Length: 339
Image 1: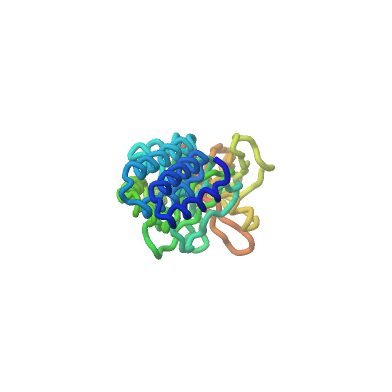
Image 2: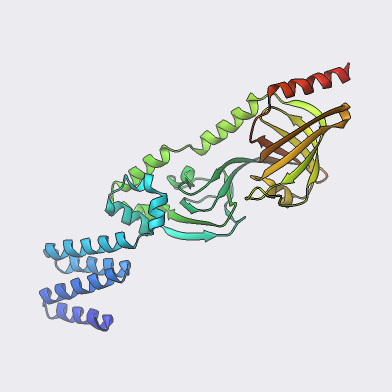
């Protein structure tokens, strides 16, 4: 439609000459053009000007609003809508458009720290692709709380508060694509879509909270009886395709229960942190007990404790729990040796 800047200058000329109707018609033309070009910021700015120039031009104001919303709806990332269908189905088209265009798309590589425990920030993260790990650090111990994947959000524990500190850390386990909503941008959305924040709040409240995750981990650590027993652990780190990732390494068994075990190994802090959230294939032997018993299990590293002299305690949760009879048998062996 020619030089857009010239058209905007022409609008100002119409206004100076008090030709309001001509200015309105040209504004409508420009708004529609910008909307179809997906330049929504400029289209909405000119629509605000249209309302200012002639608030009685109801037909034109409604028409341009509908055009902008329609074009926005058509331009939304359809994969994002599919991943988040359970959430968006409760929003109106206007609320969907408002939220989507207020968010910022982000991509991060694997092993990128999204945020650290203790940082103060108010952002809500919607995951579209990839996986992340959420950890809680207690003294020198890092505990894996959960794995986050597509269709899951995080950051809600601080998002609805202006001054709140993250109680967890989140790091990418693979390349990820996510959308980020800033608290300040949600406040702006409230001016246009008053019901959006309450719907977003209700959705977040329906999810398992960080407090729930912490409580569950504390309970879990208390429920299983742990047997302190000497043994060796041959460990094989597995990659995402369940193939060996590095050469096997050895650790010293500290304790074992039906749900998991802990072993000690010498390594670096960087290497130990890389084990968090990883799957391990393990072979346990008990030569010190003069026993030929051998236990093979796969487990997930859920916590890491640092010890003096570059030693680290690795806590593993079994993918499949042990038969309680195995723990009983090990306990009998230990008791017989003690006698």
